Image (cartoon, rainbow, N blue to C red; front, side):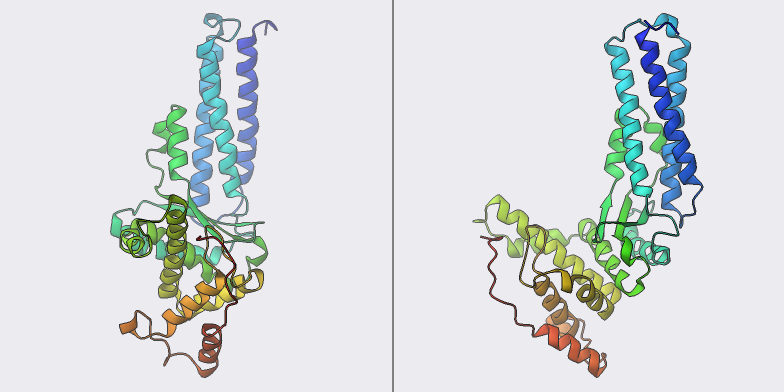
Length: 318
């Protein structure tokens, strides 16, 4: 190659980057994963990377008709490819911790069942997800569908995502707890977030707590707190007392009971809410478990229900 032909040089560098990514994608594709989300995401990344390499190779084959120094068109072409390459690397991070050896794979089927039960009510049956273990000591769920759609459309490859599942969720748990089966009842809380957003719950619940006099920050905090409590309630309906026990086991030692944040109400409030809901009669909005629990379990729930929270000193809602 003529060293002065910078356009060809930049195209070849970009092609090298795509080839290096292809090697890594082949490597992670060889691991064992629970069905079916991880492999779908890897296959999508492989298809996109292969298309990038083909488009760059096509450009290089017509290099004689391209300017020696990159013009605006070449810059836009290269930017679209490198932006997608960077995004494909971020998708690979979604795969880390999703192999059978790392993630709590036994929970994939129950999670799929819980999601299907609600999503099919809104016609969203073509969905999938990844359950992965991470080094963050937290459970969380997020949909990456919108990001995938936006980046692939901007890169000029909308055809590659035509049949890709939507919504597509990433569900995380702490890697140190991946073998601790009882604690994973908390997955039901993450599913509860999905249920909350595709239902009419926000429309029903938010007007009962938000006031016209609330400023925007206060309204936002209330909406986040309501969502967390709703996700707790949904999880309790899905899993029963086991969700309350796992919440206490997971969050109790790590949180001051009266501390709150803009995104989460105090854990003490959440535990007392769950205890009330578990023991109250149906007519009081509860699940009426009082006569179902053993004496030891009932005493345990009553202890937490009567836990005396210290005076709240947080200014979160002020």
